View 1 (cartoon, rainbow, N blue to C red):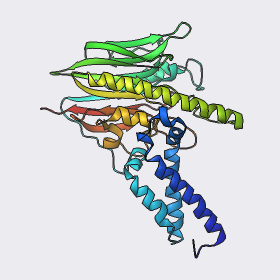
View 2 (cartoon, rainbow, N blue to C red; view 1 turned 30 degrees about the vertical axis):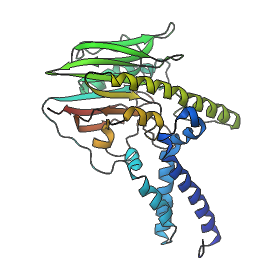
View 3 (cartoon, one colour; view 1 turned 180 degrees about the vertical axis):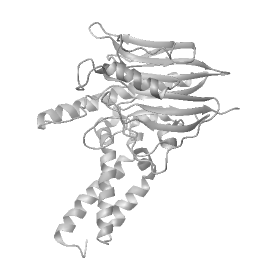
Length: 342
């Protein structure tokens, strides 16, 4: 670009690449991983690409240079994607009559393998849940443990398996179950479960979904060239499995006779095909009532949101919170919802 010094031309070149990648990433939610598995991996880097382009825009703005328009225009084109990364407005917090509070939390087996240098994680998690007092709790990577008990939740559906280490998904509720069941995923320990809950005069269906993990560590240290290739291959295969799993969940959702809430660990971002598939016309509680980055996974290098609470449009989102508490490699989230009267 004319009028730029050599170092600024190099910066503009890198800026152009970052802007092009982000622009291309906007179409990833509509590309099937089975057909474009390698390209789908880019969805994991969308939060970083947004931040990089924002920094480029700030750089050119401070220098009062025309290249500022490149990243600004690309960011404006994908403004709704920015809303999935960061919410500028204050969080909604308006308690309503007949309100339902629901928490989703990947507890990582309550630290049974001592990933976190802290004792009694199960007890600490139970104390945390008691303090926050949600009506419904959906656990992913749940592990039955004598320390994991809370008498405030008389109705429990714990779908666990495994010979050496029992684990799976669980729904704890203050509301009675009318029905419950599971959705089996082939060749994996991951699964989805659901429960029909009687909430006063209404019955709602809650899905607790745990899609296939890519195996990316929250630390992501010591990745050499060979391990990077193996990780890339594993992630592409994971995304294909996630698509199969998400399609099963969506097919089951379509048969629901009740208004639905879907929560859980999707092991993918809000810029992915599987998120877009499951979300459909549902509301993302974070986008409606959240604030800030909404980070749910303790990834070291940039904020990642892979845990979600989605609700039927007949639910009003009165509040949403992400908790900055280290009891797992995930952070718990909670939504306050009200089913609107017909």
